Image (cartoon, rainbow, N blue to C red; front, side, top):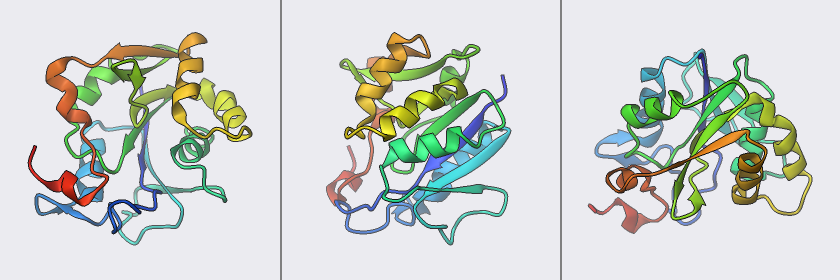
Length: 189
């Protein structure tokens, strides 16, 4: 199946103290690491979800601006789902530089018509490295109109509806989900 992809880069990076997207990780800006990873998957289209158009966005990558006030990843995913030309959207957070092409291809291999896949660690979803079906758009819009902008209850609801398949993360895959939120996260594991 053909997929679309979005790099979520709209966070304020307040805990990190600087813009995560332009922060160097092993000598390369995070935005470049993550977009290079998405390019390897050869999606039909790639988007960047951000509050403002980042100066680093390549011309072949479309911008999806967050509606204001920003609702975090929930808003970015909802806005991107409304724009995709394919049936599934691969979501990748800007701050997950340990994610691999091999793992994302494993997720892609599990999608079905109308059904995406979300990794699960200790009964908690990892919604920022997941594939959502375009059919989940209405549930995202309902979540945006509520007072809870967390992706966890939304993902549980999508699993209950059969729109997402949970996939337990194997112990050897846990490191892929390590994200960079604070300066000490840059230290070697």
